[in-house]
Length: 207
Ligand code: MN
Image (cartoon, rainbow, N blue to C red; front, side):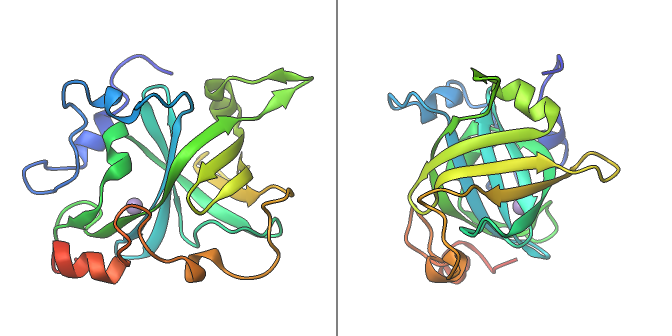
């Protein structure tokens, strides 16, 4: 990870007295997630910004590495879901739900669609590859233990120019499904039980 503040871009895009999003500088906030959990966090936030998308985030290197997935995750290994790399987010963003005010970056309502822990399962020649090396190489293989998503997923960087386009793909395992749509079947917040529309009604105008 390069020297310097990995959250610089995150902070530059936001005005923290106008958005309810965490500034990521609360003392002790990195410890907030631990609760004795040994495995790092993953979270998927459903975000009704100018275009609806799902933000896929993995705890690594003290921040949440982030991708915006326009079509959201799938349980079907045949689906290759475009995942655009976005700026690192602070760890305490993992539990953020609410409505980002109009005129602010990412204006619109956010719910935590799924949350849990993950394990890095990427190996080369039988040896585990550290997450930082996986991210640098553009190949992440993880096993999710979420409330909705479980099992193996791969994130693979594409050869498209810019280096920001990845694909999110369900691995073939016991948790894979070839039918149904988990996004339609389980639309509610994993934290509050609210739908995006219900959250918009309680936390703001809906952006
Ligand atoms: Mn977003």
